[in-house]
Length: 102
Image 1 (tube, rainbow, N blue to C red):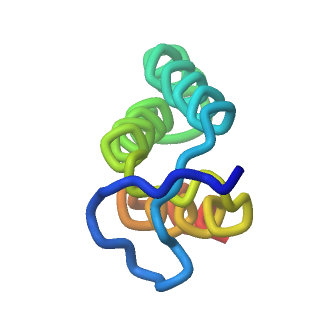
Image 2: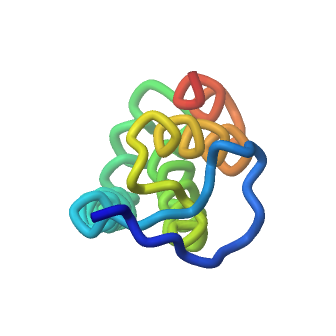
């Protein structure tokens, strides 16, 4: 069966038609939850060698992904990765956003 198309905010690329894939949605939600829950520990670890903001940066990205998940093309793996790259580049800031957007 063809993936269901869902309504959501306009994405930046024409190939990024919002679509559903329950398995991908579940995995993405689990990743975002894990990053949010690890915020303090990641900040602590980053404080040993950096500016102690890695957890906060990752948690911010996780929140943006969660907020925009309905607009993602989850049924198309390549388009999902590209959309997540653009989203993290805009929401994370610093070097993390640039590195994860590649």
